[in-house]
Image 1 (cartoon, rainbow, N blue to C red):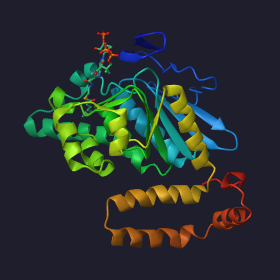
Image 2: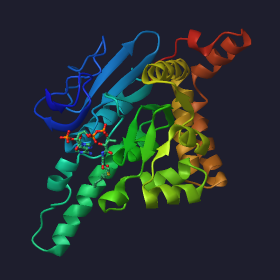
Image 3: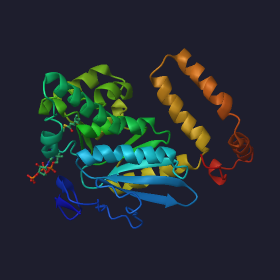
Image 4: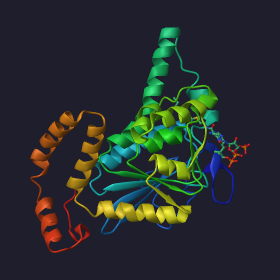
Length: 307
Ligand SMILES: CCC/C=C/C=C/C(=O)SCCNC(=O)CCNC(=O)[C@H](O)C(C)(C)COP(=O)(O)OP(=O)(O)OC[C@H]1O[C@@H](n2cnc3c(N)ncnc32)[C@H](O)[C@@H]1OP(=O)(O)O
């Protein structure tokens, strides 16, 4: 159980971990015994479509950092999972790093002298960076659904996801300058690739001002805004179903190549794509999908082999 829930809905802000995470969202099919994480629960949908709903606690703990890596490493290798939806458990998506934990783990690296202390600090930061890089490296698309506040580490998290949705009451804050540090686990590297305006990125990161849902949509941070959390989750799960119903060879190849292209020149991207598809085009999924298209059937009617 987790102590410190703020209200009946299980909003978890000042949290103390004393055991496995009991999902505050209370999904009817919750199966948190499969992955006994402390900071997230997992709900599998095993029907025609294969995707996974991850529900996170509302602050980011040292265990969240470790568990995200474990969880996404498993997801990447799990042929039953084709898409992931990440959501928050309470009224806020996340309040960012747990400031109580931060004081102990992050700000007090061990070491006999400055070199060793710095070395250890670097390792801690690199470990924390891995938490969100592992989402980006996972070949399965990740849809993230944000309600209420998305603060600090939350922005690091969502910029590593592939599709961002939010509710009308959502707001986003690159909060790190307010707590005396330059954001160091992904926001400064990924947000400029997500939002077209460099000036807006600079403004958000340097002033820590809140950006609300309408501006997030206008700037390209999110692609859709929903009236409330319920509608957003329904939209996210429907979208996950659309993706999961398509060829996993096509879907995962698309994610991997989109990310590669983002970080390389057009010529390099095309070269990588040709090498990728010289093997991936040799899949039965192409013939199956093309035949369904000729017959005006949805790709969702096809049974694709696991990948
Ligand atoms: C190498 C390190 C890499 C990682 C870096 C990450 C950096 C960051 O994430 S920076 C951002 C840190 N987070 C914050 O500064 C959060 C600030 N909190 C808020 O803005 C608000 O609490 C929030 C908008 C999330 C919710 O507001 P609301 O009015 O609904 O609730 P509050 O009354 O403010 O809070 C309720 C209790 O929760 C405690 N709390 C809030 N945030 C945190 C947090 N991040 N860590 C620990 N505790 C938190 C807050 O103090 C209240 O506690 P209590 O007074 O005991 O009720």
